[in-house]
Image (cartoon, rainbow, N blue to C red; front, side, top):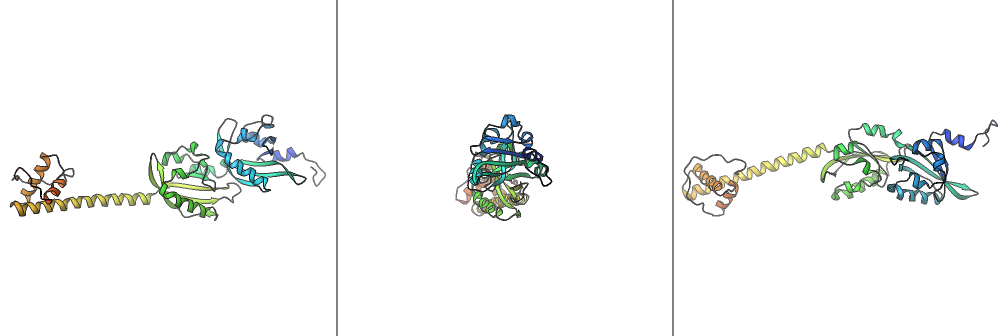
Length: 320
């Protein structure tokens, strides 16, 4: 390669100076070039990698479908760039930002060159410090990164999420809404207003707030950042609803008791306290709830034996 001043540079020198992993393969995936940054990033030396299939070296099972998409894009004369889950020599996986393009000779596609960096050097340190459960998603909702907080907040295995779709973690009734939301997000760069949806948590579902930021056009990210946190507003709403339900149940029970007492006062000539004594004694003897005995009284059932004349006590919660 000839420089402007007449000096010459070897291609390998230039590619090694980039600081990014550069890998060139034939069309069948055989590695032809593997620079020093690729050695550091993937753990394989150039001597070990050259002549091997790139899929065997660095592409885990979860990324096989994406690898097919890359080949299709390059064969059509384009390039592919995005978040891609890759594997090191030691078997560990990490999300990489990968850009692949075709190598042409005399107008004919003869190979593929890819440049990759560890996304962890850019946005992931910030996501790992977040108190939210942070996910990096492809545009098809497949997870390329999950922060440690996903385990703390929702009990998810962050390593097991990699390369998997987030959809199975969403309540079936909310999946259509999520699909529509994600479709809108990927068409408009930047942050989007959060939505509430139910996510799986230890065999059940809880309400969460999901905030999505489209960074697909960011050359150092190429993904959608999803911040998940338990929905405080929804939790407060559900708690208020449960309290209202409990109060309504208590009110309904008291109304039934007063109606049953009134019925006995009118039909048996008892005082209100005596009427409740009859109800209470019948419930205790027969191990029934006071509320159920009152409903039986209102249905016309006679309480036997005769009424008690002891002073009545207020019903306990369990009796009512």
